Image (cartoon, rainbow, N blue to C red; front, side):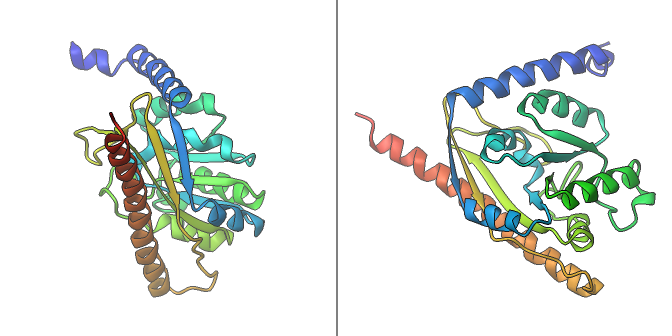
Length: 241
């Protein structure tokens, strides 16, 4: 009976409402710090949109920087039930959602809802908008950069920004990606790395090399955000009476 309850639409709707309340509370009570904002701004100046990437575990930390840009943000999110709940929880932040997967962006017909998702992402980028992707989602492996985001950059001409996020009192769940949650009254830190592009004429080997480079940069960005959070936590302890 418990399994039936958890899978019910009513449970999903209730979980989304609680998630929305949690996000609004964290947003209202927490401070935010951003390092590397200039990389994002420089990528936007190119006029081809921006592909913003961060690990799936940081998904619930991402909405808090929505106000940092007036550009429309499109978040690629899975068609699974968990994706629906997350979308409903964060929709109050003014983020648009594209349902599908970037895993097969070069062969969208092979992915469920893939063709529609790829078309929507390419249109958004063509209009100079932001497309946010968790390149290891929705099912992992954790912190492994799937090549779909690189293929999207190749087809669109948009740059990829690797971004990390961490909170000073961050909680991690016992999930496949150790999903992160920030409690209220915390400090949330963001780190954006340099833009990376994928030439339209890049070979398959070059695409794989670019993928490896972005994966490394994304891990470095995440570690940089975590170090910012650790430093802030240690400084707070040192300043306690």
